[in-house]
Amino acid sequence: MKVLLIGGGGREHALAWKILKSPRVEKLCCAPGNDGIAALTECVPIKAMDIEGIVSYAKGESFDMVVVAPDDPLGAGLVDALQDAGVRAFGPNKAAAAIESSKVFSKNLMKKYNIPTAAYEVFDSSDEALDYLSKISYPVAVKADGLALGKGVVLAQNYVEATRAVRDMMSDKVFGSAGDRIVVEEFLTGPEVSILAFTDGKTLVPMVSSQDHKRALDNDKGLNTGGMGTFSPSRLYTEELNDYCTRHIFMPTVEAMNKEGRKFKGILYFGLMLTADGPKVLEYNARFGDPETQVVLPHLKTDIIDIFDAIIDERLDEVKIEWENKAAVCVILASGGYPQKYRTGYEITGISEAEKDPSVMVFHAGTKLDSGKYYTAGGRVLGVTAVADSIDNARKTAYAAVDKISFEGKHFRTDIGIKK
Ligand code: AMP
Ligand code: GLY
Image (cartoon, rainbow, N blue to C red; front, side):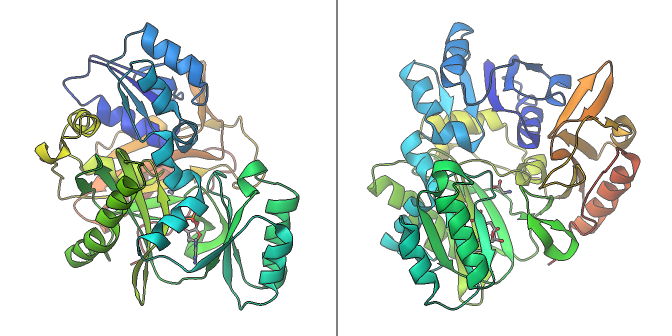
């Protein structure tokens, strides 16, 4: 069959690698893809948010399935547009993707259906928000309602920081209309675990657990980023915890979405915080996480196209999903300065040396190929992933590979895979 994958980051590189392992796939095309993905398979220069362009290309080229990976096109209704045009599409529709694209929607959903999460208030006027901030204790989390590239959350330590966040979001519109409404949330503490799950709106199958590292610097210091590295599985996420989350968080979420008339079919991502009062939902995503996907998919034994097919047809209960009993670590190599200003266009050397080890995979997030050489082309540049029998061994292998890769300003965390 012919598959079209939408997106162009490290997550899509990992997805492309996994989709190509399916014996059912004769042709995989990625829009827009990136120059790492282009080394595996064909990429077409259609942007992920060019809904009309993607629909007409998918129809014209008779793709059998379109897999939509990123949040923006899901939130904008690409799956609906494809289905309306008679194209088989994998991913939640726009109504279901609201679980990620609107924090206000997701918080109200959790409240209504008693799904454990931080206490919160919603504001659509900055005056009311500022008044509220003068009455509460700190720290708090201030969140823009809409999609903001993972940067719409400010953990404010005090009144001054919180009011600055509200002004940035609501008055100065640094995230555009995403900041028209905001959520002010109780500050929670505890380790964070990411659970990605396959669901067809009836059955939900959690994938192996993983942990992300959102801050730019070692020991969770520095600014929030799109993710500086991951490992899988989490050492904290036990069978017992999985049973608890399935009963109190995962299935209640699937059922809540059904009751709201927003059946969720696709990948449902639970960002959990393991607090002293039990696990609570920090955020939902309507898609595979990045860079969680890079450490989760290497464990998946089952043909991913069989799973996607079953989800589209709502027969996920018929598929036996199997995992390797392995561990994986992904270290992100970023441009110096990320997540703030950084320069691009520096030559990258050593990728093929790093990949000589068969347990290493280098997923490209932001690179450009020119005359046979790769150059940096984004904030997150590469995700160096290693698979081994334990996290400690995967960590050693990943960092040995990281040492072989060079570019000017190369920035990475040295502590991925250490924390409990
Ligand atoms: P989010 O995009 O909602 O996952 O938030 C980004 C990061 O901010 C999370 O991964 C947490 O580390 C942190 N965070 C979000 N909400 C809270 C909260 N209520 N309390 C403490 N930390 C939070
Ligand atoms: N790694 C977090 C996310 O994909 O949103």
